[in-house]
Amino acid sequence: MDSWQNKKITVLAGGVGAARFLYGLQYIHPPDLITAVCNVGDDLSWNGLHVCPDIDTLIYTLAEVEGDFGWGIQNDSHQTLDELETLGEERWFQIGNKDLATHLIRNRILQTGGTLSDATQALVEARNIKSRIIPATNDPHPTFVVTNEGRLSFQQYFVERRGEPQVSEFDFPNIDQVSAAPGVIEAIKNADYLFFAPSNPFVSIDPIIQIPTVRDSILESKALRVGISPIVGGKAIKGPAGAMLESLGHEVSAYGVARIYEDLIDLFIYDEIDSKLVTKMESLSIKTRYCDTMMLNRKSRVTVAANIKELITSHTNEST
Ligand code: FO1
Image (cartoon, rainbow, N blue to C red):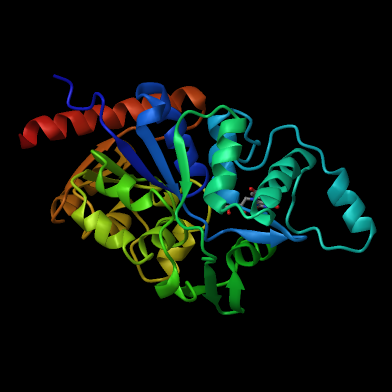
């Protein structure tokens, strides 16, 4: 009997790495059994429009329209941005004309009494995506990055300042008042497999698991809880995870990430290129396994999902 078949899968998801993993996953597993709980800490207000980079990256990737860098829409144009610049506006955050359609729809739904969950659901359906994508929360829950240049919003730090400032800590204001969005706790508690996507542990996964009740639901979940390393060969595949690990005093390696997740997961998967870390990994209180996790193109995303499925199946068979 296939221990994986018909199982409910929930993925705690950030942006590009999570989107690529979910893309592969929905090829090897029924999409209607997959739920992505998505970070909203990167959200920003752009000219009054609520932009959700991680949710949109997930939607665009699953719909196969993502841009070359993994975010935005492919072959987009920027006349609106050009015109805004002509009118004296800043242009550090690039919103393409096609991408704008997403934000207009989301904004209409939010302004007519809908929640971010409602807006996300409408956008998922409009792109004919069969997996469930839900925001971690419908409340305002921005990530602030405390740096040597002051306290910056995530996008100011990441895009405007190109991730250059030295990071000392992260700030999630009023976190005690943030509630999980409908479906989040159930999706975590009732999952058979709960993945921590290969996303940034500090600014993608932590904003989700810091929400009161979410951390408890992970601890109470009956799922096999599986972390996937976003660090390969001592470097982040994408984004500032490497620099953040370093400036916060963690080892910049898959092992450094495994240690951060150790109390919350059962199994940690890292790339085969880091197989030399095996002795260190075995010193942890969790199981660890390695395989090829490099998602360089659409085909390899499916291969990686299949590799991970195989590791989990053999891990489950060994433990029973
Ligand atoms: N990333 C950039 O590096 N520069 C941009 O101008 C930019 C614009 C942008 C617009 C919409 C969107 O959904 C994502 C966008 N991103 C941009 C990516 C985004 O900053 C990051 O991918 C995530 O927030 C990190 O997960």
